[in-house]
Length: 138
Image 1 (spheres, helix red, strand yellow):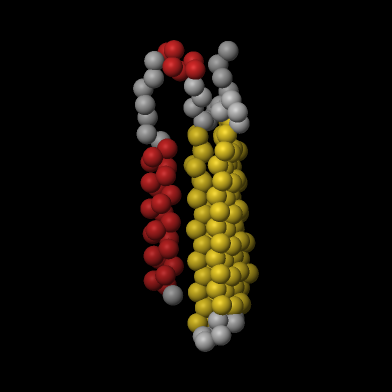
Image 2: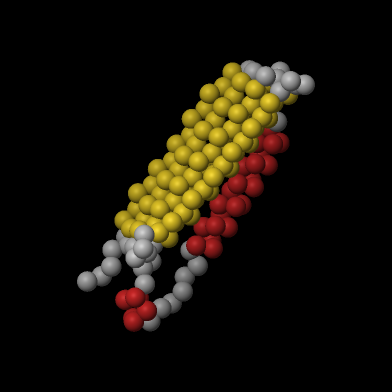
C-alpha cells in the first residue's frame, strides 16, 4: 500500500510540475504587443486513488478539472474536484491531492482536502479553485 501512495505522489507531482513549467515559459513581446495582450494564466490539477483488500471490496475514484477565461481574457478561472472511496474489505485507504498555478496582477486561490477513514471504509474529497485577474494598463 505504501508503494501505491509513493507512486501516485510521484506521478501527480510530475504532471503538476510539467503543467507549471509549460505555463511559465517566458516570451519577449514588443511594446505594441504588450499593449494588446493580457498576462494572466491558470492551471489546476487533481489526483485521486483508492485501495481496499478483500473479496467483497469496492473502490471508486473520480476527478475533473475546468479552466476558462472571460470574453476579454482578463480573468482566468480554474476549478478542480476529486473524490476517492474504498469500502468493505479487510482494509481501506484513499487519498486526493490538489495543485494549482496562477499568474496575474491579482490572484485568489484555495485548496482543501477532507478525509474520513476507519479500518473498513475510507473517503477523500478535494476541491481546488484559482482565479487570476490581469488589470490592463491605462
